[in-house]
Every structure is written in C-alpha cells, then in structure tokens.
Image 1 (cartoon, rainbow, N blue to C red):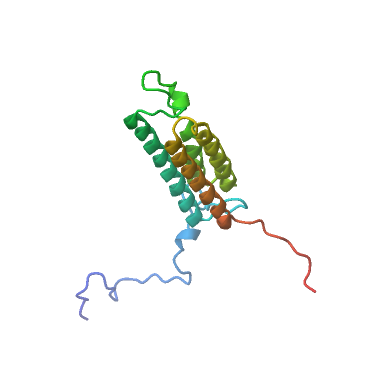
Image 2 (cartoon, rainbow, N blue to C red; image 1 turned 90 degrees about the vertical axis):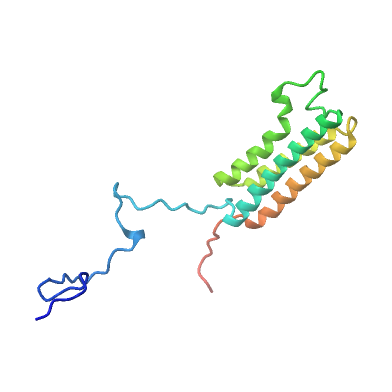
Length: 174
C-alpha cells in the first residue's frame, strides 16, 4: 500500500477520531473562570450604539467649540465673564466652568449611562445661562456660546429617538 504524499492527510495506519458532537461555538465555550463572556444588557433609558456615537461626538465637538471661544477671547482681548480679564484672570475652576457639563455628557455617552439625553438637556440649559451672562460683555462671543448650547440641546433632544424603551407587558390577546 502506498503512503499518502500529503503529511496532513490521514493514512490507514492513523486512526481517525470521530465524534458525533460538532466543535463548540466560541459563545458557548467554557472560559478559564467558568463564566461565559459578559454581554452588555440593553436597559430602558440607554442609547443605541449609533445614537451613543452621535451623542458623544456631538458633545465632544461642543467642547472644541468652547475651546475656540476661549482662544478667541484671549486673542481679541475681550474676556468672557468666566475667563476674566487678561490682567486678572479668574481661578482655573471658574475658567473651566463651561467645560464641566459637556465633558460629563461625553463621559455619559462613553459609559452608556441611562437617560443621557436628559443630562444633555440640563447641560445645554446651563450653557445657555453661561452665555446669557456674557451678553452684556461680549455679544458676539455670547452668540457663539448660545449656538453651542443650542447645538447641545438639539443633539440631546434628537437622541431621545435612540433611547431604549421599557417593554410593555400586555395581558392575553383577545
């Protein structure tokens, strides 16, 4: 009898192990700790994956917009109330005031917090209050701040469409 030319092919001398069970699928395979992989559950109030992405990038862009307001204020020499004058700048915690909310909204998107759109609406409202305080000092920068707050509000309201809703249980079908 001629032996096989292919080293990987079985010959008559090699025994074939046959099994009636198919190989395990990766999702059902046992892991080192014995637990299956944790699947992230979808709960009511969380955003879908696409809306989380839109919400997170939108609020990230608003952070960049506030950075542009900061830099513009410094370049033209007209300070917003939260930055203070170049000669007497405010405390850093006050200077960063417009950034806290958008950073929190971005973290909410990344961390998949429940009810993130409502948090975004509250942050946008606070951004509008910050902009309103600048109306008497630097009108055009205040307009940009209002636009940023409005954009955050629009993103948050639109992302309500991407929130998971609770399952409604109905009694028997008649």
